[in-house]
Image (cartoon, rainbow, N blue to C red):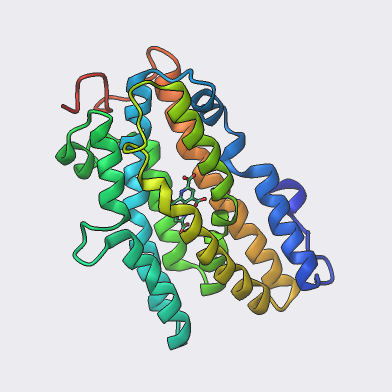
Length: 252
Ligand SMILES: O=C(O)c1cc(C(=O)O)c2c(n1)C(=O)C(=O)c1cc(C(=O)O)[nH]c1-2
């Protein structure tokens, strides 16, 4: 947390708080992670790409659950009406016509088997722990902290843009169809991040609450970072693969 500790001192104006939150992303978002750099430079093997999709499914699957926790903590019907759209985006009308289904499509078009991905049984231990920590955070912390932890979405349109163009340009087995999941995300993320940012700026009305909001965003950057650390460690060096984790040919 280093220099974001005591970032609020006697209290910040809304625009100062927004600037600190943006600075957290500028320094700590997973766009700076070496695994992301290897992906965008075309250096991932196909099975590392598959491992990324299979592990990231665990994150996608927990998003609507943590959003349901946030809904349960929200007393304001107007807040709930806005926030519940996130669950609809991921689950669709029937559970399998939204973002989770589109992520599964991405994974299967990379050659993975639907049931294997959905079961999460070949995911890395650290992926499971990181995703579980996000769900616990949104369950146990205040509504303000849970909302602030979603603010990584302010930064996601840039990483999605970088990732999708590199995936299409540098991996011959990836087509527009493979990355269709990402086509709706920047618009949904901007809508969601605008709402969440306005909420945080309005409700972080003491120095202590401002610091909690900043810490929540640092925490969430750490979750995303830890997920890529797990992939980099397990798949970047021979001999590091945890027992039971996805390996070439294992998910077909
Ligand atoms: O592709 C990405 O790098 C990326 C990042 C993030 C994020 O920053 O949390 C999300 C997503 N994608 C995403 O697809 C998504 O649905 C999502 C929901 C949330 C959230 O915390 O509520 N973050 C993200």
